[in-house]
Image 1 (tube, rainbow over the protein chains, first blue to last red):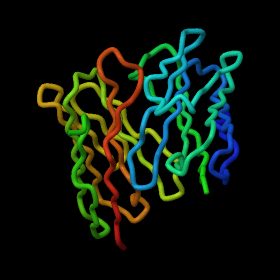
Image 2 (image 1 turned 135 degrees about the vertical axis):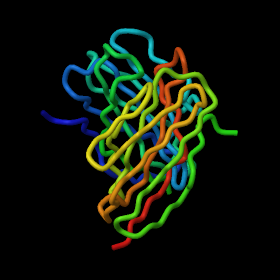
Image 3 (image 1 turned 60 degrees about the horizontal axis):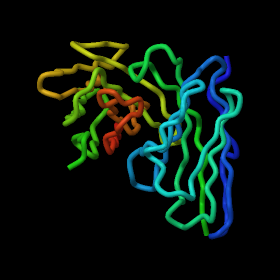
Image 4 (image 1 turned 180 degrees about the vertical axis):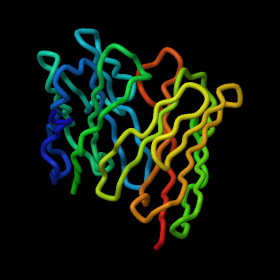
Length: 116
Length: 109
C-alpha cells in the first residue's frame, strides 16, 4: 500500500509569509507525528496526534506554529509569519495506534522549507 | 547534555569492515529505535528493541536496558550502507521520540 506522503516536497517563501505543509498518513494509522530537521541538526519532535485525543503540542517552538488533523487522517502544519530560522525539512510520520511508542513509525519524504 | 548521545558522529570505513555505532541515553525507556536516513533524506525504521539482540541481514542491534546503552553493528559493510544512522527513544509515558544527533557512515569501495 501507499506510504506516508507529504506535499509540497519543496517550498520557498519570503520571510513573514504563512505556509501550510500537508501530510497524508498511511491508511488506518491513528497516530501521526510532525518532526523538524534543521540543517546540520538532529530530528526534533513538534506535535503528536492520536485518534480523537487532544494533541501533544509540547514540541512546537512558538505560537506561530500550529497543526490540525481533520477526520483522523490528513494533517496540516501551519507556520505563520515565517522566519529564516524556520528553514528546515519538516517530516511527518504515522503508526498504528495500538502499540504505543514502541510501534514502528513510518516516515514521509519530508517538505524542505526555505525562508528567504 | 542531550538525553540521547551517539558515537561516533562521523565514521568512514572500507568496504567489508565491521561497523559499530553506539547510543547512550539518560531517560527511562521501554524500547529503542534505530533509524536509517539516506542521502536523499528518506528515513526508514531498522529496528525497535526493548531487550537483548535483533538481527536483520547484515545488521545487528543490541541493547542493555540497565546500562542504558545500545549498539548497531553492520557486518561485511558495503557502500550502499552509507547513510546517517539515528538512535531514538520514547521516554517513559511519552509518545514522542527523542533523537540522537545521528552518525554519518561512509563506506568506501
